[in-house]
Image: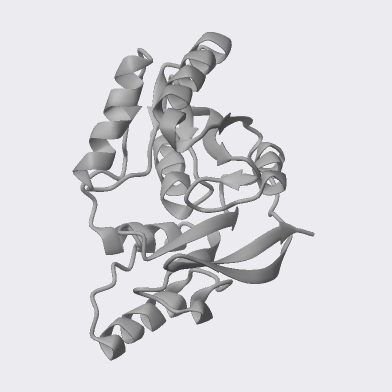
Amino acid sequence: MEKFVTSFSGGKDCTLAMYLIKERGFIPDSIIITVKETDSWTHGINLKIIEEYENVLGLKVYPVFCRMDNYEEEFENTLRRIKKERGVNICVFGDIDIEQHLNWNKTRCENADMKAIMPLEKINREEAVSKFIDSGFKAIIKKVNLNYLDKSFLGRELNKETIEDIKRYSEGKNIEIDLCGENGEYHTVVVDGPLFNKKINYNLGEIKEEYQTAIIEVNIV
């Protein structure tokens, strides 16, 4: 079967996508992760954890250092580099059903002469998070949108108890919260699971607020 690179944020959806496509017989080769200065875009994962993924996953890590104005260009350039250096023609993404994201993935791969595969495309969102948990992965909630969830969810393991608490919180606040966090309600960092050679040992640091979000530091021990 063919090798693939995963567009990797460190979060649950891309990790599940990598796992599912591997279960279909494809061979994980590397991960590509976008970085702004000292941490990753969107999830805010620091460089030490990004580097550690190479050890715990046993995959080559390709960080894409970029700004918002050259994000797409640098992502495509790195895909071309991976294709040339690794002989990889497939990029796997963890997006589910937001058309703008699905189309973005396809366009980046088309421009790099690669194929985009999205194994979670159109899956039921609650089913996706349940499948992640049931598969044996461990993820920590690293970032929350304060319009949906409060800071008490930061640092919690994403398990069935947490999902039930999100449901209760949603009902209590009378707001609609996607349990998978697909609309940006929360973001995670995955620290263990069936793809891992060993778990990431971590501790939790300070909480910072920025605009309408709160983020907790997750550091390697």
